[in-house]
Image 1 (cartoon, rainbow, N blue to C red):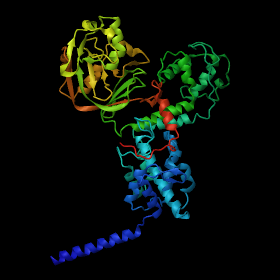
Image 2: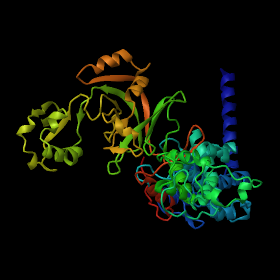
Image 3: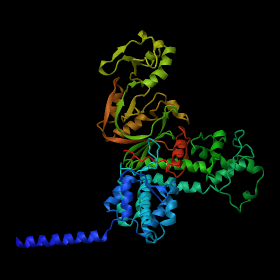
Image 4: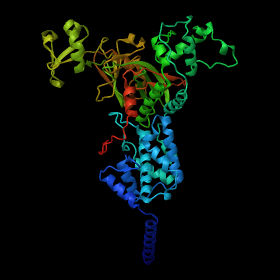
Length: 560
């Protein structure tokens, strides 16, 4: 017993000596303490002529290290400066991360500066890391508000802990690189951005508008069209040793055979009708300036940063701007089909959720806005419309609703503020949502569904719905989702469709679904795809990304 007590006594003494040595070797910095306490009190703190943004994370970071300076290491400072310089490749602005201030001071030995300046530099370096790490991981802008994130996000990572680990492991640059989206599609888009940026110094005169140019036509604009297609990579570069390089006669004016596949391919990768005719829209795509393409890429890189770290092993992704749905299973694409999305004034929203169940033979309860704006004018013009398309009219809601004979309603007297009815379309071949819908209950009341208007999928422009997504081959999707994920097989689906009543098919494992808005991406074949900004979202996003947000910061941290 005495030996055990003696051993515990000496262990306590040893621990006390170790703690004393640690306290003597670490020293807090009064200048850092003063600045951090000001941040904690909510006061604006300006250092090196700029505000510190990451107030909460800075307080937690320096408190955890007893206010000891963090950036004594010259390699750590250099790694951070390198990472900040390179963020322009990601469509971000190095100036947002104190680059100009840091470039002047951070390469110097810190002990050459006064104590206050050393503290300022340490805080600015930490603030730059915290802000950059958040923007690389979560995006510069808040997805919902489009306002700049000036506080490190607590949603997925505690960035002050990430910084502490990077300082300890001497891995500043590596840590920041690891916070970028890991998806190969993001990395391909970053590489494509570099290719487009290389075109910025090239002459890019606007090719004049005029009559459409068809295969076999001779037109002087074809000289510029060919040169532009070479710069964009759609047409091989000229061989300087070739006689073609010196031929500027009639042949260069001709829409000749070598363009019969090039022009349709260019049109297809810009979401245009690949008819081979160089008309107004094709010429506009050819004329698009490299800077415009670069800005479009930057908007889409930001959207990638908004996505979660993992989309899921199996998931569905709808590209709204591309009118396309893909399904990925175990990392491999297993399905691709066309979709119809919301009209510009009834836009399909961007969000992620999980498909939880399917409904066969669904009813369609018309949303109130559509009842008043769309259905009411039709009913007034055509009294037989409701009966012909299988609608029932109800007064009231829920279990207390009562079916009403539409012939007894004075439809002309109804208004936006006087519409006490529900319109519910019964299951059947004319039902607006078809024979199956895919449910992921959400605040927007948006879902995927079948449609009786299959002929509309042949259109290039498919902004035709009221916000929901119509699927070209819904039963192929239904079979994929239910296969191995429920008690349903093909036979059970067919039996359900013979019924005239709605039937739910529950998924054992809900499948992630991501509704996204890509206007630029690199496809599986490595082809660069561009699409029209159908909702004008690129323009709004770029304006927010480029805005002078540093001088207009609030002092209250944004809640998550």
